[in-house]
Structures are given as C-alpha cells and as structure tokens.
Length: 87
Image (tube, helix red, strand yellow):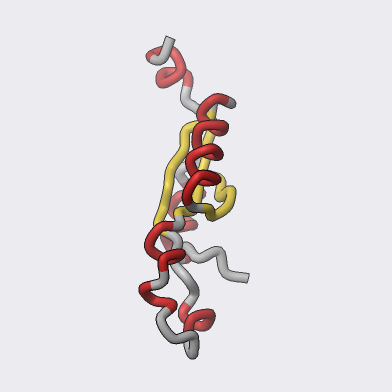
C-alpha cells in the first residue's frame, strides 16, 4: 500500500523522528493540525502525492483538486526547548 509520499522522503522524515499520521484537506486538515498542536506535538505538512500506478489510466488525476490541496500530516513530540519557548 502506498502512502503517497516518495519513499526516500518518508524514510528521511522517520529518521528525523516524524510519524506519518494521515492525509486530509480542508476543514479536517486544519482541525487535525490544531488538535495535534494542542496535544503537544510538532506538525509537518507534506504535499499528498499519488502513486504513479494509482493514477495510470485515470484521466486528469495528476491535476485533480485532491492532489493539489490534500496534505499528509506528520507529527513528532515537541522538543523541550520548543515547549519552554512557548510558555
């Protein structure tokens, strides 16, 4: 199953302590980012990218609104230094 994130980038983010959560757009994206921040997480949004196999034969998917607006949410625990600065 493809996550939509280029494999090399996903591995790089994991090595930096990021955890892939899910892909969303619009209100759900905004609410989720706000919630993760309230729970004490750093958040990172990456563009959602569809797997080439998934879009082959699906006319127009390369420029579909989902691929242009959707973002994949990554989180990691907020570092102590960052948490102290927000107080």
